[in-house]
Amino acid sequence: MALKISQREVDGVTVVALDGRIVLGEESTALREKIKSLLAEGKKKIVLNMDNITFIDSAGLGTLVASHHTAKKEGASLRLCHLGSKFQEVLQITKLLTVFDVSDTEAAAVASFSQ
Image (cartoon, rainbow, N blue to C red; front, top):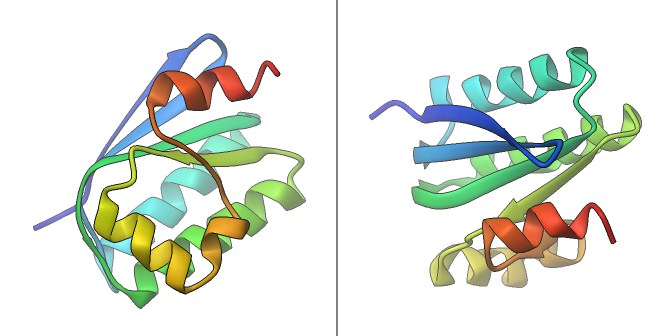
């Protein structure tokens, strides 16, 4: 199942809704390319809405970390919201919760940029 990626603007923040799995191959490549194109367009505030992510593997985690790093290098900020309990647990175990800005809701993630 391919990863579906849709984007919209909310209060000057680019919200990228992800639907499906972030796994090695097409899916993680698609996500990486999406982030790169947003940065190339000059987008500096990006929220990844993980509400409909059903599965993520180590390559998917690597893609998230690489995207976060790339965004930082470009002077942009990448935040995550709507992590399921399983995904939250994975980020906790891997200590990646300390790397990402994580919000419970999309609204909170968008609002976090203006604080």
